[in-house]
Image (cartoon, rainbow, N blue to C red; front, side, top):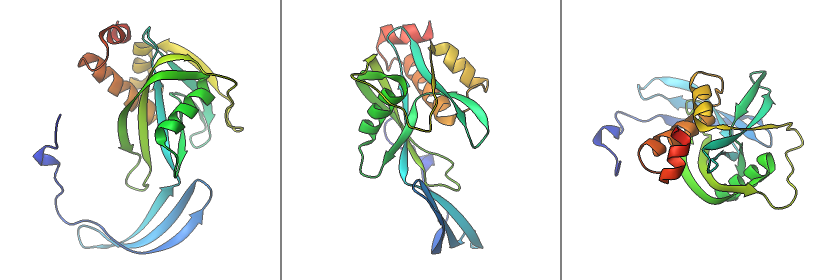
Length: 204
């Protein structure tokens, strides 16, 4: 799709953000409470969670149509999550360089070709968090030693693309960036936006 369709235009009045009060701050997030006015004209108290990193997601896609996933325990939901490699780019860091670092640290891989697939807003009703997703192809072992974050205990699995996609779609991998990136890659394979041998390997 080239250009923005007419139906995507904004309608009505925007939120008016009044005075803000800092509520919480740590090295990763801060929370600010605002006296705001809703698009309906009603006053509203609104809390916004601001993130100090841009979220990074990498879909490592091998020539044989398999993908590399990482597994780890996640604290907020108290569950075990299989997902694509993810991390954060601090302010001032090139998101692509952050993606390359995260791929090496979490999987021990490097990629010959990188392609930005999406820029998305995560939970945009209460946070300003942005995420950038990259497709990494032409994979090979990364140079030198790789080290994960000192709070991460990761498992690694290399699985067929369709198996990963099916697992995501039935809810076994609910991480939203993993679901979105697998679906985006599937759409590209179906629409002829990837190299034919790679698309055949993914869809086969």
